[in-house]
Length: 174
Image (cartoon, rainbow, N blue to C red; front, top):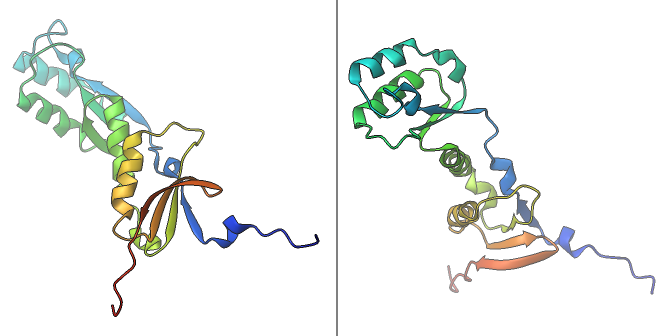
């Protein structure tokens, strides 16, 4: 009865990958083309160009920008390009879409920067049930990223995992 308690989780050599570590942390801002349209609805080229020239672009410095138009207006392609040409020198990142699309895009960019060699032939648990809600797309992208290198991929917590992928054993003689 005096057998030592063995922590099987600690001895399992599992690597826990917490997706929340890759959440966008930089400041974000929304640049809405609607604010530069005539009556908030019509794009007049001369007025639009003048409005962009007069914009204080320094408020977007080093921020991730969601470039959008919340009005139900027809926006020509060149207008998006023109706004991006003003934002690009000051912004950290520009994404066409709303703030949710911006967050998703940066989250995926952060995930793609993971050094997958750290997970080569390792048993990986992608942490679930965290305090911060993480979109399902993150777990799918992590699986796609790790599957070619990981020995196995699981979801959950090290003490309670759901198997997702296990690398098949290599044929004899290889």
